[in-house]
Amino acid sequence: NSVDVNGKTCPLLDRAGLTCPVLCVRSFNDCPAEIKPASCSDGQQICDDGSCHDSCSGIVNPCLCGFAESGVTNVYRACPAYGGTVSIKRYDPSIKQQQLEFTCAQRWGMVASNATVDSGSGIATWTNNATETMLWNVCPTAQEAKLTFKETFCLAFYGIIGVEVVLYLAWHIYKSIRERHAASLRQVCSSLPAKMVGSADKGVYMNSDKRDTSAEAFEHMDSFDKGSAVQLPDGMMLLRGFDGDVGGVALYYLALLSTCGWLVVLAIIVADYYGKVKGGIAYGLLANSTTSMYVFVFVWHLGGLWMITMLACKSKLRNYFRIECALPAARVVQVEQRRAEVILMEGEHSRLTALANALRDTLVRRLHLDISAETCALQKAAVAGEGGARREYIEYRCTRYVLDKSSGRFQSYMFSLGDTHRALLEKGNGLSSSEAQQRGSHIGENFIRVSVASFPVAVLQEFFSFFYLYQLMAMWVWFYFNYYKMAL
Image 1 (cartoon, helix red, strand yellow):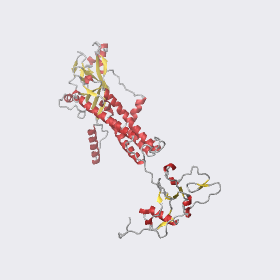
Image 2 (image 1 turned 120 degrees about the vertical axis):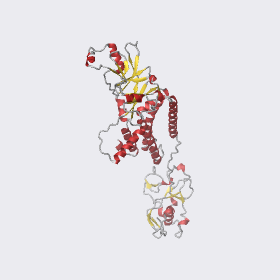
Image 3 (image 1 turned 45 degrees about the horizontal axis):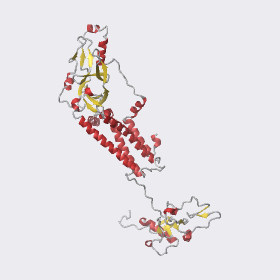
Image 4 (image 1 turned 180 degrees about the vertical axis):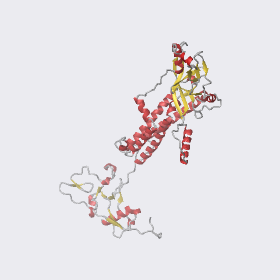
């Protein structure tokens, strides 16, 4: 600071070894004797920078301060730079430029020896419309380009985001109105077979002795909240039917396109950092490094939040852009079920472990991370002996759930093979074609289908995960801050 230990203002010290600024004149004859241009050798000429050159072509005149000759009122020429240095007595940083100019002018005999710095050097400071004989070559500081955020590309960005927000909000309101009674259309059922087809009478009857009676009672509780699968016990499922909607399909693909759009915006910002967007100039689009960094941080966080939301809702995203309907009218059925917690090893728990487990359980419960959701397409199978009728069903985890037209509910079936060895042996001759087809329509083939995605889809499934999202967002940071080698 500027005070000593006693609180008194410290005296100003002398400063030596300072370089004088360049003096600009209308004519070299106006240069002081101390810095008058020397005679050039044969074949050379004095140029506007105050030095001798073979040719003045391409020589930059420092007294233009970056302007073209047509951009200034008078063209000034630079006197040769002073070869020595000057010392300033009682150097004051707050008026250092005035002190330096005054001391240099005094050294060159342009100011009286008994004058003070308050009287000035008598030489004006550079301006592009100056008319004085001589000027100090103290060029004005170039104004840093600024982004007003009213540019065309900024307005386009605001417009796209605004339109998307309005469309998604309108869809949510429309969907909420259409689905205001959707909870009553849902079904809670057990993952175990609900009905058994007997071999003796070929009839269908409830297998009450093999059903989980507690689950059955839970299924028919009138007070059960079908709003979500959060309260489902183990072994129970929540079925929700969905039908397509043209507007929903368009908004779904718009959401996917928006995900790609965030990546494109980040790529443009990074390319602008390297000067690859506008005329090979770094920050040619976003004006300067500070604004570019602010925009990058904003877009990085907003785009990352969008992609995290897309990943978190991946299993339910497509059905969000469908309309929930009654199960018999549905094209697809969303099956929700609680994931059973598997603890591989349980030992002694410390307070820290208990706290961590409690925090995990709270997050899992609040974010519904223990609920799995899978969408099953509604399929049809021919029914033997019913005149070409087709039975509608879904297949979930290798089990077929058949739609009962009368009740509008899905149920799984099993066939009785008999309660004794004699009853089992009586089936040694096999089944008739009609009975085999009937059983096939109820429980499907004794075959486990494993769907294998195509290569492009498999690549998307592999990289569309939280692990690769973390890697991707880290790569954008490395690219932006010139760590592209690490990113690659």
